[in-house]
Image (tube, rainbow, N blue to C red):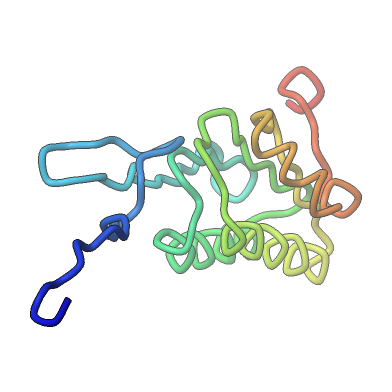
Length: 138
């Protein structure tokens, strides 16, 4: 058996992220669905779209901090078009919740998608973060 090499039976290693919710596959591989945070009513209502994950966390954190500082009363985040959230994104939401509380405001998550709602339930953040549907918040 000397001099003979055994065929490599290991599976090939995959690099990058596999397509999942919020990812599109293109010719070059998976592409991150862009995250956007739009001020519908400055300091009061923000709409989040795409994936709130480690890639979008820094920008989202800054925008949410500005929104907390720019208004009074409830700060509503419309999550209806949010594709997915990871652990870093949850941290951004919790940080915004805490900052809003220190400013005498309340962070409200409106129209939470089922996948994000399940994540909030599993992490028990559903007990911390206030949720509402669009019919309950003006």
